[in-house]
Amino acid sequence: MNAVQVSAAKPPNWDDWKWQCAHRITTVAALSKVIHMTQQDTQNISKCLEQFRMSITPYYASLIDPDDPKDPIRLQAVPSIEETYDCENDMADPLAEEGCSPVPNLVHRYPDRVLLLATYRCSMYCRHCTRRRAVGEEDRFITEKNLQSIFAYIRFHTEIRDVLISGGDPLVMSTEKLEHIIAGLRAIPHVDIIRIGTRVPVVLPMRITEELLSMLKKYQPIWINTHFNHPKEITPESERACTAIVDTGIPLGCQTVLLRGINDRVDIMKELMTKLVHMRVRPYYLYQCDLSRGISHFRTDVDTGIDIIHKLTGNISGFAIPKFVIDAPGGGGKIPVDYNYVISKNDKEVVMENYVGELYTYPQPALYRSLK
Ligand SMILES: *Cc1c(COP(=O)(O)O)cnc(C)c1O
Ligand code: SF4
Image 1 (tube, rainbow, N blue to C red):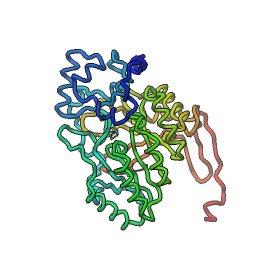
Image 2: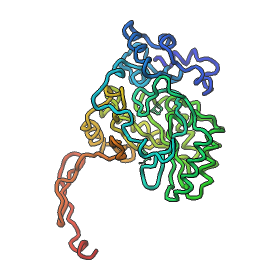
Image 3: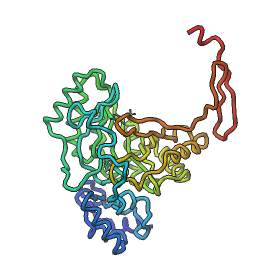
Image 4: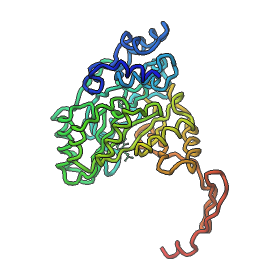
């Protein structure tokens, strides 16, 4: 196995997340040292890099089978020519986040919670990312002035009880910078839950340090959501990171993206979800791939997602099954899309299908409506 070979020759600083960030693979030349590429691959990747950037941590790159062009890790990390294709439904801002942004880098779409975009940086740029980084775009963190206006907005809006810190990946910031944001939010009395969305446990697990966790612990209740897409991403390193988070008392969820050719099969999803649960990571959402530019080759039809969840339901633990959602184009928010188990419904009874397709009837209480 490639990962083992690489780990045999691991440089001494391999487990240092700053070393991993400093040695990220960003050029075709560096990439050619870790995977085998044809001349055509090299040309295609170079062409794609004219539009979009690449960045792969040495750790995540070590999980790639160098000889398999369809390797699920490779497909998520290495650019492909399809990214340069225009697709008629592609949108620059498919979730219309701009329109819901009262202050720069803050999205207020739902009644009681907001999304705070703390940085534009990530340790690895996922090829399927909603907020794709184009070449030339700034890699910046949020400014102090911007942050203060975000705090002011949240302080004024007392209905906000849940703040989701995302980006980019907030955990690529220094612990000190992140603490500054979290402490500012914690100082607002009506902010109850602070959430962090991060792919670090998957692509840079060594970032989950004692130092980070003891900082987070001071500001409970904190919840974290991470982003595993394939069972191959579950390694001793990523398992250690997830377990350390959960052992700190921070609930850890997973938001998976349904990706064509990577995880659009029931057997792969079943393995992924049961392995996540083994690490005490709770599958939260399965996302239909959105309409961001250059990712049309990752999209499946909606029925594929509905079918996968239908086939998992009843067959594995309920808490191992995420909710399948479409983040509605145009800014409608996340909409659950599910198999329809209700065959008919009236005041007297509900006829339903169970997980193997047998029909059952539930008689409705006769007087409930008239008493209400
Ligand atoms: C996803 C999202 C949230 C969080 O939604 P939950 O369903 O509570 O996880 C909040 N704000 C925005 C803009 C989002 O896209
Ligand atoms: S970690 Fe998240 S924000 Fe960063 S590139 Fe991947 S999907 Fe996009």
